[in-house]
Length: 356
Ligand code: NAD
Image 1 (cartoon, rainbow, N blue to C red):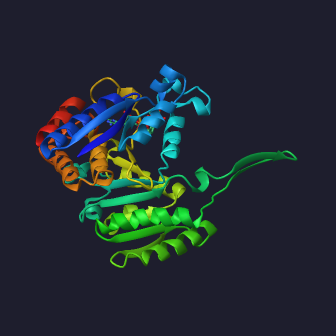
Image 2: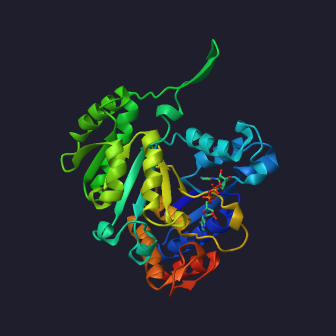
Image 3: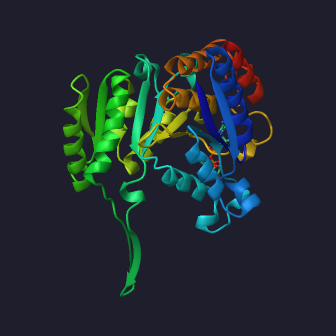
């Protein structure tokens, strides 16, 4: 198969980590007989420097013409002072919107060799930890109407949380389709005891569930979910939830797997085009030192193969290579522990590539 991949290296450690992910993709192409063609495009601080805009139109056009997008990370102190629409982060929101990416998938998986990095007690994680959070990405409070009004000396701010049935239905379908390929269990998270949007959410998710008879559905209130994630995380397979709840719960779930440098993500829309990126930022404090952990970006590339290109065997080859390298005791500085062998960003990338 030939696939076109738009690559946004971005700022800070972005270029170093994407370089390793591309080396891994090239190895997969060689081994499985595919061809990946890369188009390098600008977004974030580097785009502001070159074009004055965080998301040049050319970048959007090339991403839309591609089969998928791989992103390193954007941002850094150099661009922190600009107005909102001229900051690197505006590029991130802009590209999600331009590509119609409404579903964010964030897996939280504990690799056995890294279990010491997990802040939970061994007895809590003894049954493993392998869940995925499906977060609605372009609706709810983050995209609702907002106002700040001062009247009679009192200032009132208002963020409107809105959801329509079709927005809930399409994200629910993403979750159920995913569960079919995993352990067949969906937990829908809401606050239906208080919020109208949550009551609509619950109703629509249950309607969608009728089309997936082999999948089990459970409802859980968001406050309970926050507790259950640290009390008994192995009970979860696929968690589906709205934007604001998903933002918070996915950070909590990431934390219990140990390191930011390990966690990939995928943002998907209606078609197969997706945006794949590590969950961490551009880490300006370690940029250019060849010490960043490239694994989150490499695992993001694996998600791209699985979800955009329907290449599950190839994705598994990457995941297994990462697991083996960790098993053999190789670690970047952020996940280093006693008795292990510390390696650079580029060496970690090479070790993983060699295992495929
Ligand atoms: P960050 O995730 O960049 O860094 C937080 C800490 O984790 C730092 O100490 C960093 O060195 C470390 N870290 C992050 N990724 C690592 C990796 N792969 N290997 C080893 N260590 C790693 O978060 P921050 O410092 O809050 O943000 C830095 C910049 O990144 C800001 O400009 C922020 O706006 C931007 N940001 C971008 C994205 C994105 O592009 N999706 C996401 C979050 C933050």
